[in-house]
Image (tube, rainbow, N blue to C red; front, side):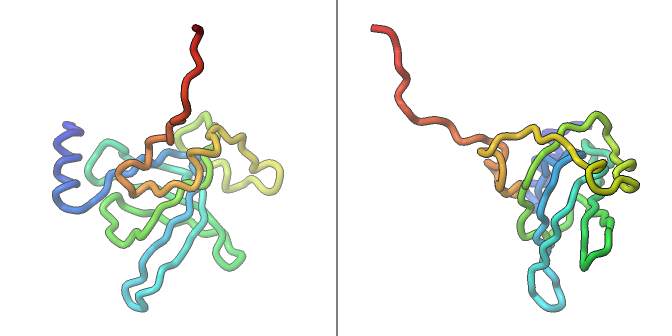
Length: 141
């Protein structure tokens, strides 16, 4: 599939192509249509289905009122207000179904991102870019 053509199509129609992978811990701010309020949902991405296709979706798992909940979101979901990257973990699998059975210390992951990449909004155009150091370089004289 021609990814550039798909990206051009989504830019013209207002949809966003998200850079989401399994093992990311995100906070999703979702607009509620009926009450016009924003619902926050902290979760772990456990699966990304067809990441390079037009109809791809991702599955997340998190806690709501003390109950484990899994939600499936499509790419063209226009009710996202923000998606904030909290952390990205080192995982060796594309689908983290085994995390459903893990509890407590068994469900730990090792973080792989630095503090500069945390708390960025994935819906922004320049979300993937890391802040550059603008200081002067020391050279030999």
